[in-house]
Image: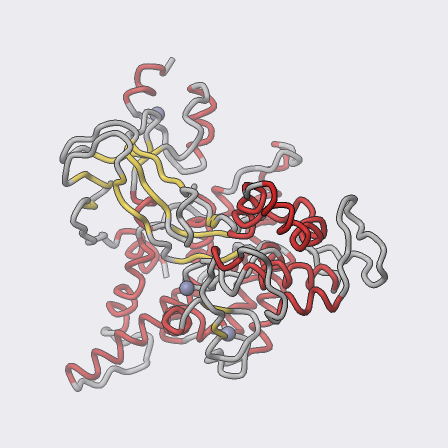
Length: 437
Ligand SMILES: [Zn+2]
Ligand SMILES: [Zn+2]
Ligand SMILES: [Zn+2]
């Protein structure tokens, strides 16, 4: 196990692109001017936060909003009516009274239903078209997609082993449900971690099948067989870029935990990860991929999401829709608001909630930190899916290293170093060298 972990940590990344080259950092292959788009970083593994699912219905693979403006609004009001709120609390439901949160007004069940099934169209919503909803291939009611190709890609890459529907490839769906419930109740960072493991297993199986086909060679399923390990390493490669520190070592100490209780706190986090891993093992354990199910590897996978400083955020088209209505010429606006206002009132302040989740951006994670970075990774307003954007903060010349800041670089020297200690290094960027006491 020890050696497996070490090898997994040192797998070299051989990923090339027209504009950048990766070695131990990311280097520019061309000249960039200030504000130039350096690249768009695709999510390797991501998951919408469990609590966010009430607010936004997005494609489980590319994270763009799906259905229609009407469906987005209707579904949210419907779930709230059932007493399911975004913070997981069950409010009192039924009756025509105002809901618990102060300014919201309630709409009738029939109105909400007609919005959801498309009978009621909102004015000007045709200006905000969304892709239709495709169900999960395994028949669960948890994952939805923007297209057949996203449904298929998610199924092939992650979901077939983690689906709780009838078509699932998980050997133990009951255990899978327990795992999901545990994640929802404790920390939903376990869900993207499980996706990393399932995708590695699925990639491993594909590689093995290809090997058998190419060479006609019999590949055994004995984990001690010499040809298994290189295939597993190959399957692991895309993830290896993000491997930094164990979750319980790198998670920031919450404000309400005293520093003298730090050891206990980290131990509790480790125990929680152990609990989660046991449930996941029961659900999708694969003997040939046994090294993936060690607590150490699981800790590193979760750590990868913990240390990734870019969240999954996709702005809501529902917000744009209401802003559009608000911007209409007065007479049109007044006419439209006769229909839209009751819905806006029913949604209350939550009308503009974005899709939020945890994600791992492989290229961004390869970029080294600097307290005087030359680039910035972020989500732009116009990015309507799970991709992130890396922009040049100043001119960058060819062969120069592209750096981003992992922390708030405006903080003073000591605070910066303290935060960077979570990433396991002492910063020696030109600014830190100059400011060091
Ligand atoms: Zn999609
Ligand atoms: Zn499914
Ligand atoms: Zn620095």
